Image (cartoon, rainbow, N blue to C red; front, side, top):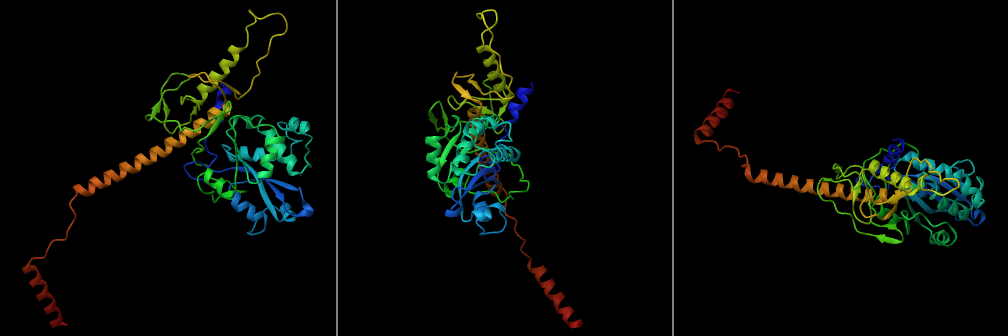
Length: 364
């Protein structure tokens, strides 16, 4: 039950976009100095508005980290976004800054020979690509956007390949804004940002090397859960989905199905051969499993990402239908309700008022 609760909480759809329908934008970023004397020096931070944040780091507008003053001029190299909450983004930022102190990242940092004092852009890039494979972030539908093509090539040639459900893109700040809804939030980077219910509007997810770009269809307000068979998967409710066959499921039901599949894959002691028996690792979030409808092998992050896309599409469809219904109702009301007109005064009433004004002037 605890595993199912945690797995369900990991589908909280409040990250990945700046438009109110997409949720709040939480990102961790890497900044590098353009000063030849500070070449290779970097800074890792958190932001809800990267366009404003890089201007702060360069002193164009007020605020910005004190450390980055000596890095000016500087550029934003890459961002990782799609975190369900601000807390998870800040945890990722801290582990990226202090890999040797983070229990989750310590082993990967030791393998890459990256310490807390390492500020090389190359080392920070290698580390963040390795962190995408570390729990709990490997189970999140994160996205990596490179603003500097040089480090995108470094990540492709020299770093660990990202998990299958993690999208990697390259482009300028305008391309990033378009991918998250066209604008960033006006919230402050160091203060709490209001959490809005919404979803990622990304339309591409990679599963087993295949890019699936079709937006899953939404048929009706409720859909049947592919894992438990019950109804009640609402059009804009929490859900996970298969990016292959378009089925949807409750997060708890899908997590239970994945855990059950892991147990079934382990041979029973009765039929197992001699020697030590394999142990089933007790994890709070399933790493993956087969789709209950089509049997495709999926990661947990892939079904969360697909579920967020279906929920985003359902939310947009719901708003469009509501607007059309409202306009139709108002139009029908205007056609059936007669326009109120002021009554035309009768000639007798007009003469009486004229006589009253004349009497008033005479007495004054």
